[in-house]
Image (cartoon, rainbow, N blue to C red; front, side):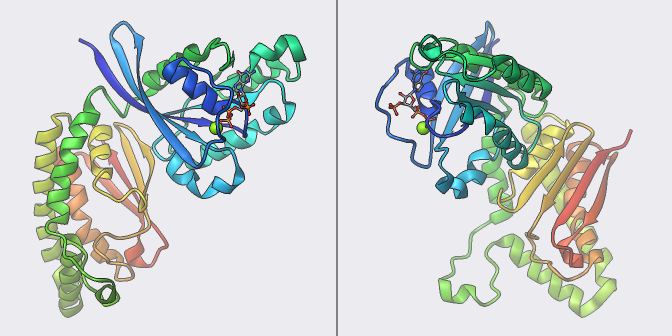
Length: 350
Ligand code: G3D
Ligand code: MG
């Protein structure tokens, strides 16, 4: 059986080092002398057979190195599984800036993603001679647990090799996305949308300024808040009980869909039900899942910690059902209690 993997790869580095040329070479085995400077973000797909039984579907994102595209960086980096970090072997300045690129990448990607450091334009060695210390580049890449390769987009030297090596590294460390799970996620996305968004209430701009629920979850939040305001702490066990049932129902559906009870897999499906702008995954493994959010989907901001805990019974029960009843939930911060963001940890206690 052939394993199919999906990876997002980003191409980063200063302007004019040859990122777009490397991409074109890899995708279509062509080199074009007159590429227009990359405008904003561009991405291309390619299937790569990287071992006898493994195919990777790579989505390769290319960004202009120009400062003026800084605002696109979050989208660009989000969800990347690996990076090619490129400098120009004929311009020392491009190598000096590489640490800043690594730093930026580390800030804006979720985990310690693998990279291949690329010294490009090695075809010009004979004309120009060494401008950058290759051994230093190698040491730097290795100090970060990664590798260094010299390429030429012009002759094609080592270009495919760089992509293959990166793909191996992404596949080797990937505990989160197992083969074909990506396909399963597409199916559950639809399911989750139906469950959590139910018919969207159409509202015009003017009405939106009043507190009107935008979807079923916000409507549920309004009801919960009204109930809590009227009955105070007495309402909490009732809210908790109902939310637990809701979590169990969602958990059973996901369990059936995924047919895999590892925390990492369930957590990944769970995050897909949120707007990626509102949540940030801090860590994800089969033992622990930590996630932060800036917005409460129920609109419970500035109510109380107790109310948040009661409603979070949905998520807790979801994980208990879909993973194991040994899942513990710790709420470190929450916007309901007035914190600026929510921070929660789900841990599998054996
Ligand atoms: P970028 O996407 O990093 O900004 P480009 O870089 O791919 O646009 O390439 C910048 C310039 O370097 C281009 O030249 C391109 O032809 C050239 N180039 C890219 N890779 C190589 C290489 O491996 N060897 C040589 N000799 N040149 C390369 P122009 O003149 O079009 O600006
Ligand atoms: Mg470019």
